[in-house]
Amino acid sequence: MVDAMLLGRPKALSTYIILGDDETLIIDPGPPSSSETILKAIGELGVNSAIIAPTHIHIDHAGGSWRLMEELEDAKLYVHPRGAPHMVDPSRLIEASKRLLGERLIELYGEVRGIEAERVVESRDGEELKLGDLRVKTIWTPGHASHHQCYYVVDEGVLILGDAGGTYHPEAEAITPNSPPPFNPQKAMESLRRLMELDAKTLCYAHYGYTRHPELLEVYLRQIELWMSIIEEGLRMGLKPEELKERLRREDPMAEKAWRRGEAEREMMSIMGFVEYFRWIWRGADKF
Image (cartoon, rainbow, N blue to C red):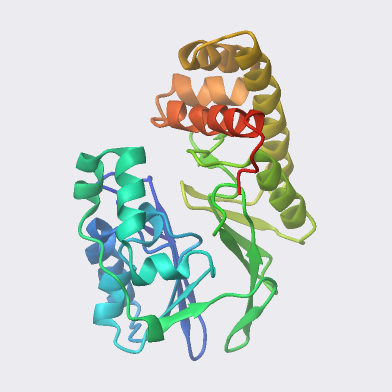
């Protein structure tokens, strides 16, 4: 695990590097502003060729892929088919990110460039990547994003979650949803149930760190159920997002603990993912 120093902040984004006998997998290289940190790490490890494998194409996870591939001339990008076109031409991805996060933040993440189509490999659900003796299984996990996928190191029992397991706050011993719009909680829970069927021993979070408590997958599933219940009822009562937040603090002990410690800076954006989901389905449309 490498601390990618997201926007210069420690313990905000984990990049995972899996070293095989004849190939290396770099998972979630982060935005362009983190590229020098990751390049330094792989240089120290002696990596000169790799598969760049974002869990999804959001800029804070995948935006710096082009920079690594510029340095690693034989590298390939391995990504969900829904995300692949936007890594070749990131214009729509950039504009959507600006609308969600604000233009200033996207500027701080750094310049995002497209990647040559011939260097992009589309994943298949359930396929195994062979890194020498290591087997890494790709599992499509929609919910946080329709183009989200997790990676399971089969023989080691290591599950790399990206954002499918929420945000892990190790110092607060808490999990909170990582659910900016567009978020689909039903599909997120379906994905969690798939992951719970694995014999995972270690959970690796993008935000942030890892734990040897695989039962946290079920804890997160129950938390999503709780948030859905609280937010749906609150919306029907006419509560505003700030009022929903206060109700969540009262009824979700983990969220209250994380927010009390100031470790969940984007909590309102996560609440809005649920809010927008209910607004969407009440308009009679399927989110994805």
